[in-house]
Image (cartoon, rainbow, N blue to C red; front, side, top):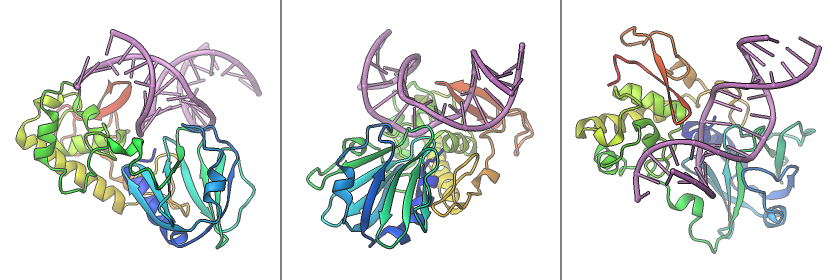
Amino acid sequence: MPELPEVETIRRGLAPACVGQTIQEVRVREPRLRWLVDPGLPQHLAGRRIESLGRRGKYLIFTLEGGDRLLAHLGMSGRIRLLDAPLEPQLHDHLDLLLASGWTLRYHDPRRFGAWLWWPAGQATHPLLSALGPEPFDPVFTGAYLYRRSRGRTLPLKAFLMDGKIVVGCGNIYAAEALYRAGLRPSRPAGKLSRKEADRLAQAVRDVLAEAVVQGGTTLRDFAGAHGEVGYFQQVLKVYGREGQPCHRCGSTLQNLRLGNRASVYCPRCQR
DNA sequence: AGATTCGCCTGAGAGC
DNA sequence: TGCTCTCAGGCGAATC
């Protein structure tokens, strides 16, 4: 499940093969993704040069010469692989970008929660990005910021952290890990956060995500980078997926509670 | 407005 | 073997 570190890993893997390259052809085999792929997309992209590959939260942004953009989101199960030849597509290989260099960028997504969206240059902001909160590594993302935004909120801290309007990039895995590092219980109402705890939480979010980027993300089932390489952060996970196992810090049995239909593993002793 | 639930999807695993 | 059920979850939309 690609969260910020996985998307960043893919971006870094793709960039050297994409940036400066011309898109020769686009093949859409299955347009029914999160939103229907614009039938005009192949036309829009053919013959265009990719100027840069950026990231905003969990979105990849391909900027083309002239300022038009292509927005991609991997949803739950999306993968992008670089192939040195356009091999026979397999089940769930929904979309290909064929580059003039001979490389093929192939999108694979069994659950089809992902998206590929055309974003014309004339449109200054994209509606999916306009309401997003700061990047976790942005200097504005601080304890003071988290403290201010959490005032008056009653929802659980975990849901608060996973809200992209508060901060981007934190999905179920990294929200759970950050809360463990900060010693905060996932169910705690966000508004009850003290100023000091807000500092700890902001630091924990930054640290967890930064470390995960260094490790190349978390490979639990099938996440892989652009070249098929796996991530290593799963070896660092302290709570996610460890229900019933002992806390690495105090030995207590880790508990799982369901918050808004999502698994939330925590240590009942270390997290208050 | 904030909080909560739903819906979109398929694959893996459990249980029978 | 094969069926049914549950769970996984990003995130926008709908509802309370």
